[in-house]
Amino acid sequence: MDEVIVIGGGFAGLAAARDLTQAGVAVTLVEGRDRVGGRTWTDPFLDTGEMVELGGSWFSPEHEVAARELARYGLAVRTHAVPRRVRWRTDGRLRDGFPIDPDDLTELDGALVRIAEDARRHTIGTFAHSHESWREYVLGFVRSRAVEDFLFGWWVMISGSDPERGAAVDAISAIANHGGLPSALLTALRVTPREGWTRLAEAMAAG
Image (tube, rainbow, N blue to C red; front, side):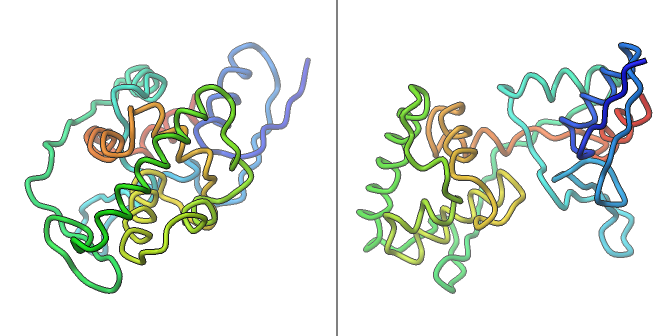
């Protein structure tokens, strides 16, 4: 019998291990944490019993694989309404509604144009910053601390990872797939598994 070692118990590793096992391959899955699920983790909030996502939370209609895996295990999803009110903390200040001062609008606009252009370059294979983290990439052209914090905050919400560790190419790919940064910000924060991502990871591991 063929034998395979799968490194990592995130969703990619779990899917690979499951599919190989079902194909008759002997699989050993190695995971560094004491849980499966990778960057997703559903856990009780303090002593309230309310379950919260401590890693990646949302997916969008374009993420067909996520929807297919949830359906495979009979796990329901819920769609959240677009928020009517938002609050940001940028450049050391709490702000209601808009994340920056009017004086920073020109820089934000320029940053969004740059990111949109790099997303276009990514789709044709000419994005030149694949080796950089999201933090390195943003600091290469942003000078405003508020704009910087806004772009870092967006990445944390989407990926659940530190901007210093998240790859710029992953962020640019997400933006390209969602039709631009504003669309990515709004549409990606809409759909979640009703029972949480950990429930899906555990179901995949059991299979």
